[in-house]
Amino acid sequence: MENRVYCLYRVSTDKQVDYDDRSQADIPMQRKACYRFAEEKGWTIIHEEQEDGVSGHKVRAENRDKLQIIKEHAKQGKFDILLVFMFDRIGRIADETPFVVEWFVKNGIRVWSTQEGEQRFDNHTDKLTNYIRFWQADGESEKTSIRTKTALGQIVEDGGFKGGIAPYGYDLVKSGRLNKKKHELYELAINEAEAAVVRIIFDKYVHEGFGAQRIATYLNKLGYRMRGGKNWHHSTIRGIICNLTYTGVLRSGESRSKVLLHLQIIAPELFEAAQRIRTNRANAAEAERTVPRNIAGNSLLSGNVFCGHCGSRLNLTTNGKAYPCKEDPNRIVKRVRYICYGKTRKQTDCDGQTGYTAHILDGIIDKLVRQIFERMKAIPKEEIVNARYRDKMEQRKGLLRAVRADYTKTTDELNTLKAEVIKALRGESAFSKELLGSMVAEVETKCLELQKQFEEAQAAYDEGQAVMASLNAQYDDIISWADMYDTASMEAKKMIVNCLIKRVEVYRDYKLHIDFNIDFEQFSFGMDIVTIAA
Image 1 (cartoon, rainbow, N blue to C red):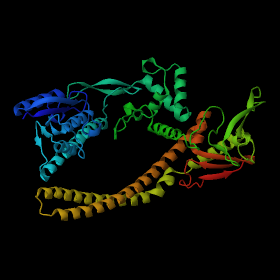
Image 2: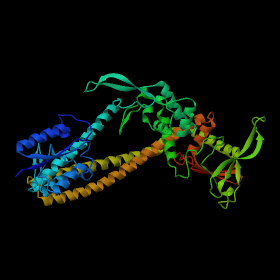
Image 3: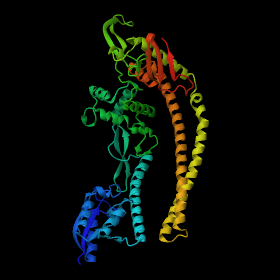
Image 4: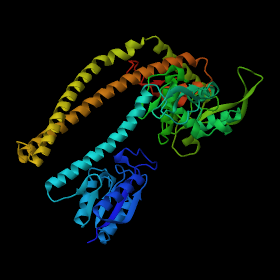
């Protein structure tokens, strides 16, 4: 009886790969090997299917069209043998591929590999061998991915450029070094003209509160252009603001280089400030903001000032009346006021004032901000930040170290027992399967308990680390704001105030209730929430 053969070929990428790597062999080599093997066996190949750029590790069988076609033809009895170059061409998913192969065998199709022979399921040993083979294939695929990521990570950690297009602000220059294929490698160097634009972007974003769209408009009006002469777009601005490279740190996945000063365009502190602003602005559903909704105009508060009587937001407005400017009597200015939106629109039953003169309210806030800065400068950083948390952090660190050691020890014990189970299935162990099963269950329970304890200890330690980092960052922010506040533009002052103050509630006669973004309670200020009067 003639053996009718179907062949399945697969490569993981659209590109031809290394001919010598059998596990990733290209399509022509797989086809040649299958035809030679079939000829030796006296079989006839009647149909072929090939998958280009399909990962056997990531794409499940149900989503692989070619494999589904072959399965449908198997149901119809159109062939007798499925032939592949190696079994991992059918797939590399440990919890799925063995059952795909078994499905073909149960449906009367013999499954052969040119390199590994026939896959049978005559007994439990065959099944176990089959599962181990595909478990190993799954692991090899994962290791290939890990090796690629690790290689790129190591390049970056060593301060090398991983490849691709140079970010705006940098040029690609020849390094004088060659890779394994004798191709010259490139590295980054600062492009001073573009770097100047990057500094403008971060300065406007952090110190003056410009959004991405406004920065793009600003640059375009001044005649700055992107590479290729195109106008700036807000999405490009956002990409620049998120790019860690400008701090002199190269990144690939979780890998980071040390700070490379020859690549640093902006200070790390400026980058971190930009990320905090970006995070706050991204939370569009949040009713209370830590950055101003609108930084235009000469008012100090925007987006975080509310009526204390009804809770409505106070909006800025100018009425038709004009007055001589106090600083320059020859200049006429309009009266700027914060008005209660709920009261003016008759949406709330508000018994407060309709509005508050902007320069009076701003003057109160300005005075308070300056007092805060004076108090912060008068207290050493070590006294404020370090003393309170040093002892607690040592305790949490000790607990984490002890639980980690117990968890690692128990995990090793569990792995040893599982290895013994495999021996028992092969008949090579001195222990019974029942005893090993009981021991595995017991150790697994212990592992789960220790894992929970470890996660709790890690969370407590991370929380303490976050508190320390937050306190240090807050202190540094306040001191930097204090240094620049007196000479800052109105836009910059507004940004500082909105980063410092979460919410201002205004009552009749300019009595104020203020919530701060800065946790002054932790700084022993007792100013987390204050109520002051004009």
